[in-house]
Image 1 (spheres, rainbow, N blue to C red):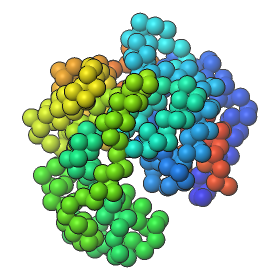
Image 2 (cartoon, helix red, strand yellow; image 1 turned 180 degrees about the vertical axis):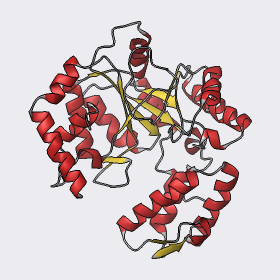
Image 3 (cartoon, rainbow, N blue to C red; image 1 turned 30 degrees about the vertical axis):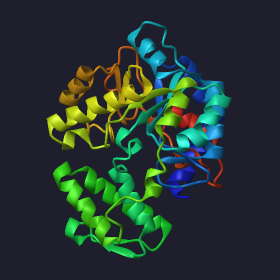
Length: 339
């Protein structure tokens, strides 16, 4: 636990128990909060995109008590001004479509009567290939190497001896690859995997980590919303406009074919300010999506751009105290955007 994290915990506890969070939640401006989750694992997994099952249970219990948890459809209506927005409106979203959304997250959401939206990378469900980010993750987790010579990328030698070193190397390589046009990223990823000793074909185990269409249909029939997250999770500003249009429209078409209903919500892959622009937004609108979610941090006031919705990323690290336990204070302060 770093000094910075400990300090953040101390400040969060002070703000929470002094009632500052309560004041902000009740007297602050009206705005809708949208949370991003990715994975819910059995235990702590410090990869920046996961929460443990125990932590997620506590998070959802707190949300059900402290917020007005609504569907993304309802959030859209409130942001349009069709219905009162309020200060406690909150929507839960999951990006990518990992299987643990069904096996671990959904039962907890159902127990606390909380709606949610799952954004699907449809190619992974159709068996096309794992997302490239998961190919990289799998290669780093499986390699027997204790270091990767990445000097040809300008990244030097990346240590792989410990789990922490592999996580850091994953972040370094992912960040580098995300900045590259797709025509450069694909061969670079293939070369990285080769150097790590990864097989040319994705393993069945990586594919089995994703949802199936049967699981998606079951969750939808029980009330969860389904949205699109492209076909292959390619960053839309890093590919040709025609391919970006296909990624957007084809993901919508495939989901609608499987579920037999219109799909209204979209999430940009990666989703930072560099990963979508006005041209990409126009393609999303043209495809018929009513909303599009980014990963830009923040909340959404009434009248916000519905095709540039801000969200707050949630993982274990953001709400764990120095002793490794879930901290309601840290979670509450993060939701109130006080730090």
